[in-house]
Length: 301
Picture (cartoon, rainbow, N blue to C red):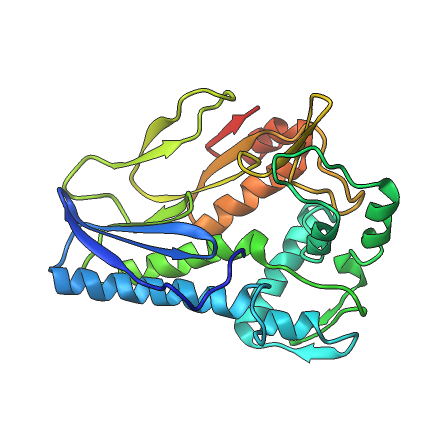
C-alpha cells in the first residue's frame, strides 16, 4: 500500500454531464468517484466519507507510516503482536492467498525491495544479495494464531498486495448506502460500481490494450468490479530482457514470462485483484490459469 498519508488531503467535487465527480489522492494513487444522484452537498458529503475511509485504511495499513499496526508488527523484533479484527481478517485472507498460490503470494516478501529497485533501469542485484534477503521471507515461518502474530526478527509484512482492492470494496459500500447511488469508485485503475447507471447504458471503463503498445479499449460495465496487475510502470530492462516487478518469494527473482498486465472482472474488487495477482504469479501459465478460473479477463503480453 504505497505512499505516506496525512498531508495534502483534499477532495475536489465538480458537476458532470451525468452527475458528480470527485478526485483525491490515496494509497499512492489518483482516486476518482463518480456519482449520478444527489445534490451537490450530498455528493460532497458522500465523497468526503469515501476519501476518509480510503485515508483511514492507508493510515492503518501502510508500511510507510510509523505507529500503525503494520509498523508495530514490523518493529516487534521477534515479539508477539496482538491485532484487531480488521487486521486479523486481512491476515486470514493473505493466508488463504498464500495457500492458493503455493507460497508465491507472500506478504513477507516486501523486504526484497532492499535489493530490487524497479525504476526502468538495468541494475540487477547479485544472486548472493537476493539470497541473503530471502532468508527473511516466508509466511510459513510466521506464527499466526488469531489474534496474535509473531514474526522472526528482521521479517516484515506488507499488505499492499490486497489493500487497495479492499479499500475500493469498502468505499463502494458507502456509495450503496448513500443518496447518491449509483456510483463508481476508481482507485488507480482498480474499481467497482454500485450498480448499473440510470442516465446511460453502462459505465464506460478503459482497459489496457491486450497487446503491448496497443491502444486501450473501452468496455461497458454495469455491475461488479475490475482490477489490474502489471509491470507497465515498474520493471527493469537488461540485455533485452524485461524483468517484471512481480517477484517470486520462493526464488527471490522476478516471475519469468509474466504478462505485462492482467485485468480481471469479478463481483468484488478484492476478488478481481486476487485473481489478477495470482495469474501474474503463474508467469507463462497465466492464460491457462485464467481460463481455468472461468472469469472475464484481459491478458497483455
